[in-house]
Amino acid sequence: MKFLKRALIMFTVFFVLFLSEPFTAGAAEEAQSPVYYVRFSGQGLNVYADPSLSGEPIAVLPNDTYVQVIFGPLDYLVKIRVYETGLEGYADMRYLKRLDAIVNDWDMYTYEEMEEDILQLQERYPELLHVNMTGKSADGRKLYELVMGNEAAPERMLIHAGIHAREYTNPYLVMEQLEQCLYYYDCGYYHETSYRELFDHMAIHVVPMVNPDGIAISQFGESGLRSPELVQTVRSCYEYDVAAKRTKNSYARYLARWKANARGVDLNRNFVTGFGIDVKASQPSYAGYTGIQPFSEPETVFLGAVTLLCQPSIIISYHSMGEVAYWDTVESRYTDINTEFSSYMLSLVPYKRMKSETASGSYLDWIYSGDTPVCSITFETGNTDCPFPMTTQYPKIWLQHSLVIQAAAAYAYVH
Picture 1 (cartoon, rainbow, N blue to C red):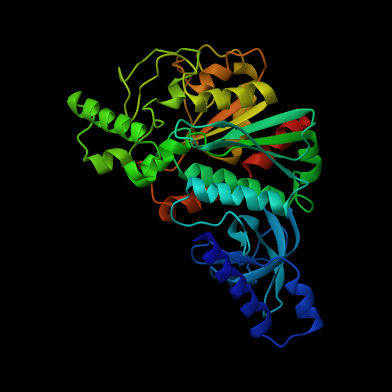
Picture 2: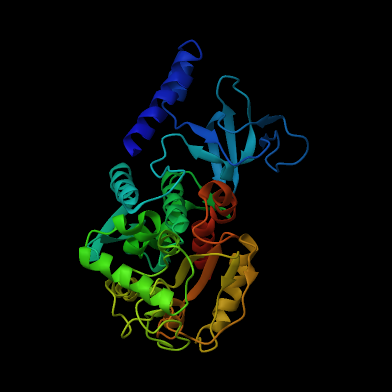
């Protein structure tokens, strides 16, 4: 499927650049530059003569218009040239995507697609992206840590997504964030500091899909699992949840709403601090079961090991839903530094700030109890029940979060 999509994309590029106008030296030069297209623009992307993006637009570009980025980005700002017309002006880079982008899916982002994307990103950016595989899930899937930039940088940031199965839009989000940073690595600026300087100062560690087995269950039901024993575990979970009146859903809907890993453990209740507090389920379940002890699951061991080894000073966690942000716990040792950091991030992503709660075994609880000071925020994307359709929810999510990595790195750069 990915191959067919990319073959169609490259055919489109060829058609646009070579068949729609006479071939000239100028056209050849343009053809060597990446082609971008307009997306998520609603009634059109405004193009301005002035870099302040003020006044009347000189053009309004509908979705799927092809452009070339000739300068930038500076924060959101890029200067573009429109193919065929040659019109030049300034626009908001969040509405542009490279036509040959690797992370390019518009229905359901699967573990297999992510693996293929990781391989191709590493091939395209071998000096900028490093891939570590040091763990496997309960169902035998490799667990990936991606590192962008200077691995010996004085500071590190950790971003993770997909710890809850039904929240599988977020792995796509963080993979697209990562690719955007990679392809603007040598020309982008955030708050007047180049991307290269930011990422020389702070290595970016990304765990894009903490819970691949659970995501496979939510996306494909039983057929997403490889192990017959784990299929039986999932069936037993349904029997328990029906008997305990924890669900009234059909089996298919129950699996689509799956939140845990393939062993029925809620990975975000399997960490040490507050473990066993506010227990929702007494045995394996689609949601709310803590496991028999902290770090009983290979996925939490992996995420914990990545955290301890890279010792990040900033952590961004992605969950869904509600357009809210968690930034503190009652027991946190780092409330003071997080007050400033969370305010900074919420000026970029205007989510509702949630009150501090008592620790209950989550990843956030664990990192706030550690010996290494850490700034962290957990974003809950989307405003409807999970799993939500990407076609309706993702455009807004992307516009809100496209510069989160750059912004957090810039914060670390000046603090």
